[in-house]
Image 1 (tube, rainbow, N blue to C red):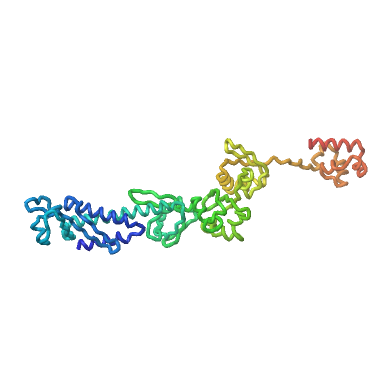
Image 2: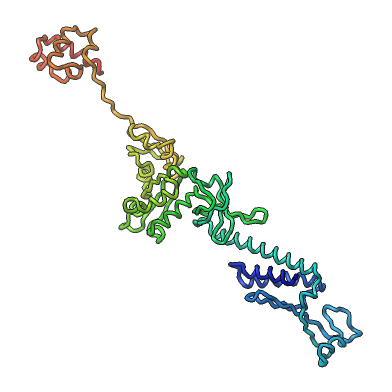
Length: 412
């Protein structure tokens, strides 16, 4: 019965994927030798033959034939009289090899062997999962949602390995149920209490980067390079791209015909608004592009302090800052400089003033006379020459000059 249980454990070991044969052989032999050493004091004189393909094994013990009177160690020696019972031709000094059956082991030894083998299987499996995912950090994984908790989601990959998507690595609009298919990037892998912990992320900039690689063949082929990705997950993102081929428009390639390429990414990221920016080493131009869709008027760069002052028309300031400061925050992260936005000092034309406002300085009948020729405001009067006013009104030249002086003083 114990033998069957042992073979079951062995078969379980044999079925493990991604474990190379030398490792498998070494572990199995090590477990058997440990058990033999406990049973027979030493395992040095045992040959262990393991058949991985069949999932079984044989153990052979080698003992030296000695005179009956010299017999002292039953593990490494066999008396000549006993050897003769096996084969009459045995002589002193020869080796006798006999098979050790599982029935020769104490029941406790078999149980111990099985437990050790199971423990080593588990250990190898954990190490294998850890190594596998350690090499896949930064890759996109597709898995099935197995359990949804308040702080995290448990996901199973194709091999049934457990992966974790913490709440803070989920997009705010993410809502999953058991059985849903989920895509995320492997963020980090660590061993916690001797168990591999694989943490996934959907908020990492690397996730967006990998999605672009999947959707844009030019990026996958290396014709277009992603220089930097910055995100406010689920809200807004900026991605700087550069083409090494002048014939390829990197922004157009990433967006696709009528947005065909970027739409899939936007849907995956819960309608995250993505600005694709053409990277340049010209810092002024890069800042201008980073603050898109706002139109920048002028820029002052302080390279020592990594600080930029950007001047825009009043109507462009809100565009540069963005909803909740999102645009300026992402632009700062993208270029690596702190950005301050200022309204451009515009030359504001002096406002016109109605003639009635001057009633305390100009007599009402004069104002009435000027209004009769269509001059209702101060500027409309000043736009006409003194001669024109004399010709078109019944006013004296001296009166007109005085009126002009009063009106001009308003705009000085």
